Image (cartoon, rainbow, N blue to C red):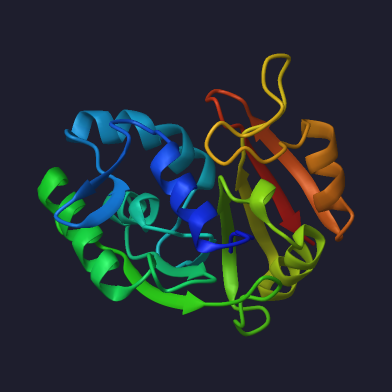
Length: 220
């Protein structure tokens, strides 16, 4: 769920962000396509460890975009069901999903054990049932939400009691106050935690081992 103002801004973001080998087009599909399994494993190791994805969990990824991250997570975990949510089907669609999952199956030389459902929501709602998710992931998206507090309320609604919200989000530093890719303002760590706690989440932990820190919150 990314609060992009229009398609032009969305395309600008897609073409500007870089990660591992960089956002690129392969066979007409845009995504983060790592060239080797070693690069992919190194890039995603911290997140996979932090998220603690368990067998048979339902994990909603809000702002899933090109589904690269979720394809890697499915290849690295056992029987997790991913619900990929965004506000547009232009880049999050079945063809994009099938290609990306297939790309990483070939890269890792193993079948992806995850299952996937695409969900198109809107600026303030995922349109998913209440208490349907074990975990919610918001990766590199929160600073782009047009209605951040409403979306946090929505996350709280769709999480099961005891469920967890994970944020992967670039934060303000001495040298950085706006996002390099989209040019939108970033949160400080304190403001981000405050915003999430305002919607009745409990702050659990933070890992700052990568450029975009990982934060965990729980619904209690």
